[in-house]
Length: 521
Image (tube, rainbow, N blue to C red; front, side, top):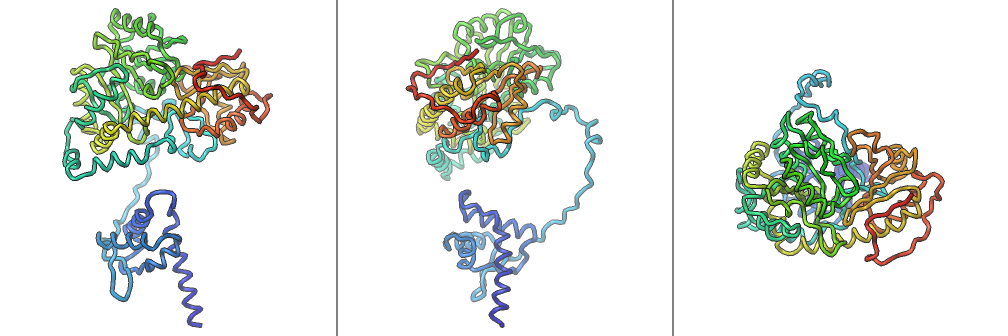
């Protein structure tokens, strides 16, 4: 009878501990770290109180199906940090800790109470919306998302370790005030920017938290209520929203297949925000002659240009890249924005601005008022990553993968979407697609999402959504090559209902034969 009672008590205890560690992910973070975090959280929130006895290392390891050494390491570190205490011949117990703070939840205020106090209301603008759980979808044809399979994990770890020595930490752990990591600035000057034909002085670069912060700071610095700000139409929605918060004097710049047209609209802009290398979202690559015409027009009409070169480093399809607009600028009127988000990982949040020194000096003060400087540990790790040759190697590998994905899509689309007009500029990681007459891309996007397929409706890129009703963007940076054909075959019926749901077999051409632009009647 006593044995049965003990078994019941043990069963109840096991249920309790299983619940406490239910979120343990054997494919995620190191297991001993997860165990420590869960125990600390349970102690801090009062779930585990003082003198609560924990299972033995053997019991918990068996309960969770993990190695006993993992649990032993977690317990030992928690004991070293004062969260647990070992009592001889008794076991492991929760040590004395401070009582959990009592939280009094204030009454929630209504939106109407706050609305009158807002100086601006960004949430009222049209926003790009992508599912947070996009990795769980089988066919994510999304642009600009992080592909875990392509991240250079081992090389990045080496770069982080190199930045984690005592001497290195002493170099970056202090308050930089408004400065940047000198190693990263030097790597930008010597290895990254020359790829785009840009040679910058040390005082002509500032590091930012991604290109998003770079663009936001430039809008704050250059756009007043009276400034005529030129934006591409269609164009990057976040730039349109940033500019519209700063001024109502917005000039929608006209585009053709070569990008922005240096016409009267461009001439009346004080500053123009442009995506020249791959126009967002059409992917058009502005040819060299148009770039020279644009710079000449900017000189005559005194227009400042912000060049957002968001994914240029991935282009490996041409024998020689067309020089960036900044590299052709002899007047110092082009401000260059770059980022590692599209080519390495968005979560890294490292971008940069190249501009004449007076501009950088003002941006440095502005950035200090906002956040002082981006985390220097990330800057130093990235500097090591570039200096060790890992960045160049990563670009080569990723570019080859992207080219293969583009090739598969370019071969499938004429068969699966024959009524669509398809465009992809050389080196771009997305296709811009115009559907047949009476096609509604947003309705298609919502229906396809229910079937596990993610694409982006094109109306969000236009100042007038009606102009983008038939258009959508098909990205391939986040979908594996072996899922592309199946995904497109399932997408086809949502675009052209008369099409079959199974993709026909398409020929495999050599990579070198990939044509950057496809077109169908």
